[in-house]
Length: 239
Image (cartoon, rainbow, N blue to C red; front, side, top):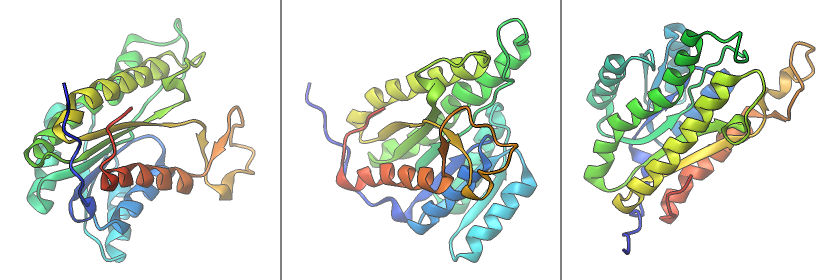
């Protein structure tokens, strides 16, 4: 069956939601890049103080932002958060989901509660947020959903059972959504960050682990923005 290509469009004037509770440096840079695209940005995370600081910074740059403290494992809080964003900015055009959690334990040391929490922050939170934004996108037959992954999305990491399994699940969620939503004009991508996000200024500190490649958060945020640019080219949804 032939599918209609996602409609070419400029997302620069729409509303974007950036969600994340894991890597703070990327969380700070991705919203700033989206404000440069002209997006009005809803920011979701648990820390009210951190979100308020980021909101203030974006507003100082002349763009619109709304800090929404949200527990991404709580369906009610997520729904209420999106309603706040819609009231302030209108329908959601872009979702970037960057949340993750881990107790960094193996099978016998990991508790059932810790395992469940990682899954609730990862694939469950991603599922809840996608359910909130997709109706807006379907009405316009356009939009973008980006999920960030890690090396553990494709290769299980020893001693991180909860994290690895949850990241695999987010990747599967993204692939399934890409195939479901591609015929309806919605771009879905899973972006793997294959390294440790560390700002250049602190790479030399002894406290930073070096068991993997170190990645500049500015470069990662720019890559995410480049992925969104595919929409302007009417490129296919993929994961």
